[in-house]
Every structure is written in structure tokens, then in C-alpha cells.
Length: 102
Image (cartoon, rainbow, N blue to C red):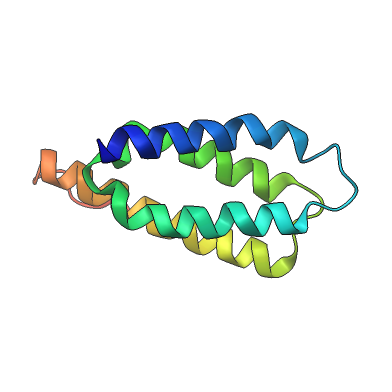
């Protein structure tokens, strides 16, 4: 159930992303999305591999938006690193011999 809720929420974020370029200043919306991603990361756990493309796409879109501030970019880099760690942990749980690639 948790996975379905997370996937649905991420889908909503994906639908909002194209609207970022429309407004003159999207800083508040970007902050809201970043805060939501921070809250979701601990819940993703073993589903990291399934959500990899979605999460990476959201991070990439927010990073590319010209209204993203330097503080927001730093937060996105932190989220990206945390997500990579979650992805590697999920991969190691499936194949303990795989090891990290960092």
C-alpha cells in the first residue's frame, strides 16, 4: 500500500514539472517538491530500483529549472546522493555480491 501511495504522489509531481517553466518564479513550488522528496526517501527502501527513473527524472527537472536557487540545488544534490545510496542498498539486498559502485 505504501508503495502505491508513493508512486501515485511521484506521478503527480511528474505532471506538475512541465508547469515549472511557465511561471516567472517557481521557488516556492520547488521547495515544496524538495521537502516532499526528503520525506519520501526513508519510505522508499527496497522499492528504490522500481522508482529510480521517476526520482532521477524529478531531480533532473528541478535541477534544470532556472528558478532553482543555490540552496535548492544543494538540497537536490543531497537527495540525489541519498537516493543513490538507497538504490545501492536495495541492489545489494537482491545481490549481496554486487557491492557498491560509488
